[in-house]
Image (cartoon, rainbow, N blue to C red; front, top):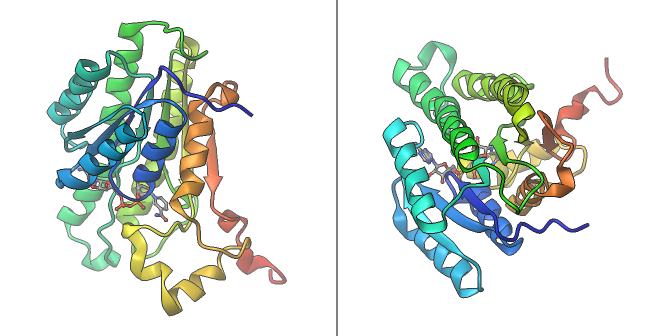
Length: 265
Ligand code: NAD
């Protein structure tokens, strides 16, 4: 199966750590020029861009807060300045600010919704506008591709994380609605819903005793690695998935099979 992305340009938000890092690396390895967006610390994004360039790829690091419209406009502007087009958006940035419902502050609620949901909305909107503006390019069957980073928590309720679960449930319906709206223009919008993948967002939950407990929720018997998600992103961005529209690919080792029901219920 040939998942090449030669001649294409990808923006990966939150691309300098965890799943975004793996997506950036693997999209670049598949031939795409990659814009590694970072929020506040330029060094890891610049190092990643340098390592992609050293390997013969093309990459730049661009700062910006995805929850701010002006920053998103600048991210796309810098991408066009460097590479002249945008073909792929991986709307990956996300955060957690966990608290029990009765203790959650409005700030915690709004911070998570504004990055996880509004941030993806702003980036998807900017991407669709750009795909339409630039028109058909001879690099892909689609006019453009958007990959939303969701979570198994778009369908699995998560006590103590109401802001996060609400944001991911929102992404599911946002992705499907945008997909329905723009499919006729030749734009494919899909999501990846990771399960438990070991990254900075969940280090305390994936190690030691907590990691052992977590494994009970994963029928396939291992905690995921970022590359599991990067590979799905490359496939969703490539023409190999050209007929895949408005779908969520669960990369979760079977977590959404609800293994607690094995032998019960
Ligand atoms: P991570 O903390 O390494 O990555 C999150 C990235 O988002 C960071 O690079 C961070 O700088 C960036 N970010 C945060 N606020 C931002 C802002 N305002 N503007 C731009 N960027 C911002 O964690 P991760 O696990 O790699 O998470 C990536 C995505 O995957 C998130 O959307 C997360 O919800 C989702 N996810 C992760 C898992 C998992 O198990 N790791 C599971 C399901 C979903």
